[in-house]
Image (tube, rainbow, N blue to C red):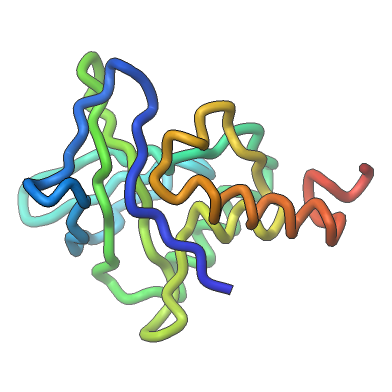
Amino acid sequence: MIFSLVGCNRSSKTITAFRDSGIPETEYWQIESIQSGDRVLVKKGFRKRTLQLCGLGDLTLDAKPYLQQQVKQSPDVVPVVFAGKDKDKDTWYGDIWVGMGDDEESATGLLLFNGLARLSNDYYTCANGDSLKLAENLAREQKVGVWADR
């Protein structure tokens, strides 16, 4: 199952990073570190950005190790979509794609699908909020991760 993210707007403090077309562009960045299950530090040349994965909340303790594992199984440079930037902080919002070749998938979607996180209240502001909701619903139906006891 493929989950893709094409945009996110976390709040009115977010500057949307879409180009003239209104669609965010995919860029290729190296993941320097995994800061948490929903936050990574990426770099391109001398530029570095903190990227908050869009639409995630209530992460499990297994989210960070899972994300680290997915990144290890990915190329050195991964597709990244920057959907917006917080005006008050140096934090960007968006998604990374992990995996290889045709098996690249949204990190956000994978975390939700595997029950390692729940959707945040503002997930609907992500351009593919419906796909993210589907990933969470599938995890809930399969009773995995955060949904195991429900």
